[in-house]
Every structure is written in C-alpha cells, then in structure tokens.
Amino acid sequence: MRVRVFYHAQIRSVMGRTSEDFELDHGATALLLLARIADQHGDAIRAHLFASPNVIRPSLLLVLNNILLPHADAGDTPLQENDNLTLLPPIAGG
Image (cartoon, rainbow, N blue to C red):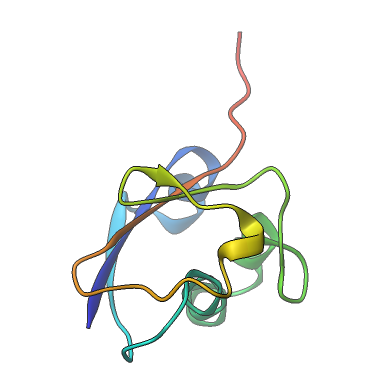
C-alpha cells in the first residue's frame, strides 16, 4: 500500500523535500513507518524522530489524515492505502 509522509520545519530541512511516498505492507503502523524513514535516511533524521529506540521524540507531533495521532497509538494503529502522515517537529521563532 502507498502512504505519503509530509515533512515540516527542521525535518523538511534535513530531508531536503516536503513529502515522500512509501510502499508498505498492509498492517504497517506509523511507528514502523517512522523506523523505516530513519533506516532509509540515517542518523540525522533518526535524531528528529526518536528520543531512543522505538520511543518517538515527545515534541514530535504525528498527524494522520488531519487527526492528531497520540504516540501511544503509533505502534497499534494500522495505516491504510493512501493515508497521509504529517510530521510536525517543534517550531521556534518569534
């Protein structure tokens, strides 16, 4: 199945793009997708996504199809064909 990930703020800067499509097996979860992103793109992005192995950085917001996805649900919520997952890191500014 195809899932699109949208990158914002610092994550977009590290990734060098605003979005990316992933082909996943049916039943894949948001946590699995984050791990795949980190595995594909390396430690620079891993540091923005995870506080430690399999622990999503607390400041990272996950938005699945325009609905906030709690970190506690990221490993239990299966993604669906054509889902959109937006990664919103904290934004500094003033």
